[in-house]
Image 1 (cartoon, rainbow, N blue to C red):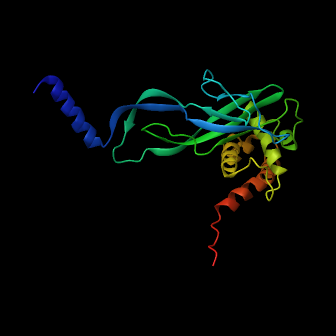
Image 2: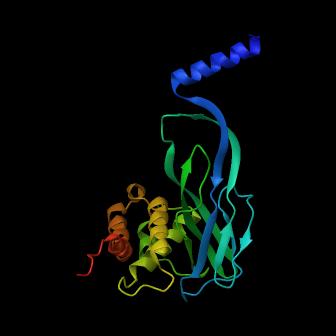
Image 3: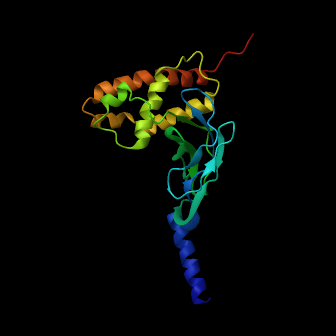
Length: 232
């Protein structure tokens, strides 16, 4: 048996003994993403908005159609990973989407997907992106969090939370379907997590207001997960 063959056999034995192997796979930079961009003031789709994955910043940009819809191709990078033949290696992950349009402040959303060592999947829902006028007034939650939010996506999320607080959960906008509810909740929970309020001087008040603003959205989430009884 040649030297290279011996080394290969030794590596295989070691790999099986450890129940883990080094292999190549596509590391996820961003998933395949479908979404829709909505003007918060009018409830209408935003045509001609520029959409891209927020990271990496040099990613490709697509333009929304008349229905506000967009499709972003996923991005991967070849990498070496440690795989476990007997393990799962599947987990929920997310990447951020950024949208720009004339006269509107940049909008942000979260693209949730299932990640695994075998590669990325598409987003778990059609990603909703709410956009607000560039000169939109600050909200009461902005005042409470003035000392603890700095990022543009956080300022945008505070506007989104205020918008949610004004919703009638019994009569939501036409565009707010089950996908939109799931996407908005995931985005706000990631950008404004409850632990983040601890850094605010008025953290307790900010957390309470945020919870109140999220109540209609949470109610819609609960409402759609209730299993209705079958008719007699």
